[in-house]
Length: 205
Ligand SMILES: Cc1cc2nc3c(=O)[nH]c(=O)nc-3n(C[C@H](O)[C@H](O)[C@H](O)COP(=O)(O)O)c2cc1C
Image: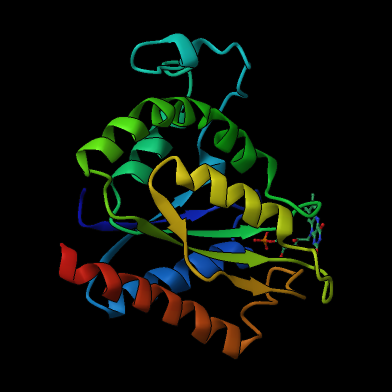
């Protein structure tokens, strides 16, 4: 584990609400004395999972696409950070396609975990859970179910890395790029999320 928080900025649009959210999370981490790396997922080339199931059979659960794109660069950040953050828009009641494409490539970590869990449980070596702090932005001002799909997917994706979802920040009515900047309360919540996220891991480093 390294000493840098990782903040995944998941919009396809640069300088929108999620990018601003990522910057505010980083501000919070830094105010608490930590370091943060903002990682825009849109800058990484990620090929879709082929559903070939080769990762299930491979002894180290490697993926046939591993050397062909940048999915592993994102996975190594996810595996090594003491705490992770996601700042993402909602697209069609779910996560943006590039982010979801990366999540699907996480299938090899699901396969790996199926092997690892029984042994870790038997030896009592199951690592303490790390936390993911998630901020989601939706354009619609209302909607009970806006965030459901994204949260369920994140929960099960992150479980393969021993990461648990902390209470998410769910922001409605954030559509135009400047909408977050016009909401001082939401901005303060994002800074607070970054600060608290780092304060929780600081004593462990
Ligand atoms: C392809 C696409 C699909 C979207 N689907 C939804 C949706 O289902 N519900 C919603 O409330 N907003 C939806 N939006 C609006 C975005 O969630 C909103 O504009 C958000 O602020 C974008 O984040 P960004 O500024 O970080 O790019 C959609 C936007 C796009 C581009």
